[in-house]
Structures are given as structure tokens and as C-alpha cells.
Figure 1: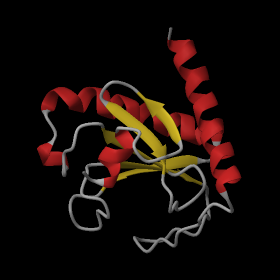
Figure 2: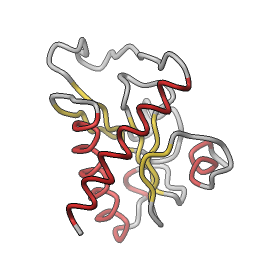
Figure 3: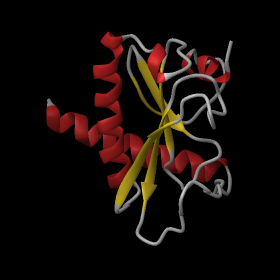
Figure 4: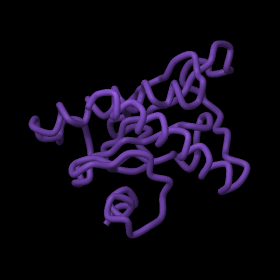
Amino acid sequence: MCAFCSIAAHEIPAHVVLEDDDTIAFLDNRPLFAGHCLLIPRAHFETLGDLPRDLLGDLWRNAQLLSSCVELAMEAHGTFVAVNNRVSQSVPHFHIHVVPRRRKDGLRGFFWPRHPYRDDAQMTGTAELIRRALDRSTSRES
């Protein structure tokens, strides 16, 4: 089983910020910036081309929701949303990166140094900020 499948099955710990029947989002443990999340389908699919069409709508709706809530929670100026297909895909399980961005944050081109969390407490606090923003957002939709 791949690492992301193990996270989706709650067999290995992760700082989960969003989950439903088909998807789960969690903090990247090697973030570009605090709040960098990965959104994955629970089922194992390696690339975008492997995803079943009936999953695409819910997956990208969650990417849209996560993007706006990461921006809000991290007080960012925007987000970068990206997918790697095989090349640069460190885990061979389809995943969408949602990265908070700020003007002049130092990201240039595609060489991006990682900015790890100080400790688990910072990671836990960041996950909680995003979960609260998601709770506020989904309660407004109801």
C-alpha cells in the first residue's frame, strides 16, 4: 500500500484538514509554506489520466474549497494549485497541491525550497486554522 493510501485509511498519522467519502486533504509534511495541503482521492490512482470521470467533479470542488479556505486561514494573498503527473510526483498517488502564496514570497520558477514546520505543535495549529476556515465556509453553504 502506498503512503497516501495508508493516510487515507488512517493507518499512518497525518494532519487531516478535510475529508469526505471520496477524498482526504492533509498538510504536506515537507511544505513550501505553512498551510501547504495535499488533496487526494481515497482510492489509489496514480495520475490525472487514471481518475474516473465521476470522481473529477467532487475532487475539484474540494480543491476549490480548500484553496479559498487555505488562503483565508493562512491570511495569504492567493494560492498556487498544482498537479504533477509522474515527473516530480514523489508519491505515485494522484494529489493536488494547494499552497498559500504571498507577494514576494520567494518562489521563482519551479525551484522551490521547502520550509518545514518548527515542530508538531505548529503543524497541529496550522491544520486547526484550515479546519476552522473550512467549517465556516461549509456552514455558510448550508
